[in-house]
Image 1 (cartoon, rainbow, N blue to C red):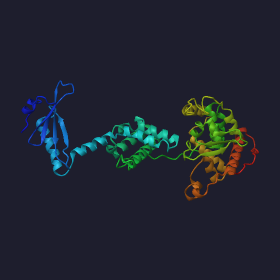
Image 2: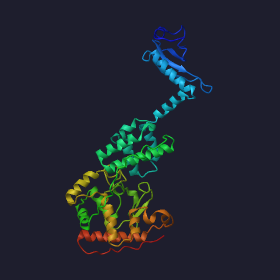
Image 3: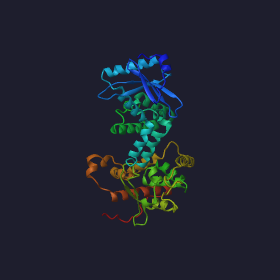
Image 4: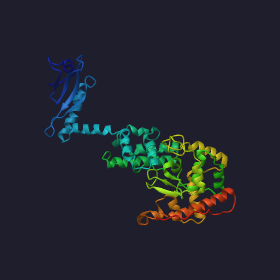
Length: 405
């Protein structure tokens, strides 16, 4: 039978049937089926072929939106592919499966897999870059295999223009990590970030002078932000390590009080213990302890301190020092310790760095905790700060000797 527009329009379901196909001589047919409510007969074009013992059927389109000659043309294209050994139905299923793997649906799986492997702060940042539409929103609706180098490059350039190089570099890094995981999971065949624009970030070199450290310390008020900044100056820790600290991390009752940063909050995934000397200990003990929460600082019990921009603006106005960020304090502490004679490997240990003497083969074999050296270094540093702040001479405070187990 040769199907024509007139014939197609005239076809109706045979009596007693809910579905029927009228086949054309060219291998495609007009499928008629009754709607679920029985009120209408729906028509669509279909083509069927034989492949490996199967007889797959592919829908070409709905009638009358797709005319008979257009359906004939599509059917010939599909049957032509079958003639050279292809399986169009399988290709459609594969494409349908790939189309389901849009970035917005896969990212939650990635985050669920990585939540326990990444430091909390890193996990929060990666989550923001991958889920917030301000960063890679245009990619969220695309299947992973259709995200190309040009798409990534365009997104990174836009982020760079709107947010600056550091943010663009970190956002791109999050996307690189996501696609590397997707490749290992068999969800993507390639990483479209490879070769894309990679914004260069200039390493900060700002080191506060002794006078600037003194001004910052004295400008701190007795609020949560001021106490955090003073602890950063005393201990050289990262801001979130202090800002999200919790009471169970502190041993304040022993003869030699200490603070242990748990591995779950540590950037390198390793627990880190620092002794608490009188100035730091006094600050911590001045923080009111609340029964309803474990965190020392901030108004949100689960997160710790979060009002960083507001606190920094107020601090800048009081201390009168410009062009410095909170992380510059950590660099300034390391430099200041070196200036007063603390050995580099002890400074690295205080900062909880896994580089230099703690990396590679040396780090594998040298497992020393440097307890005595760390304590003496912090004694020297606190004495140095006390002299700066009080404007007097340095005088090391006597500390009971550290017991070595």
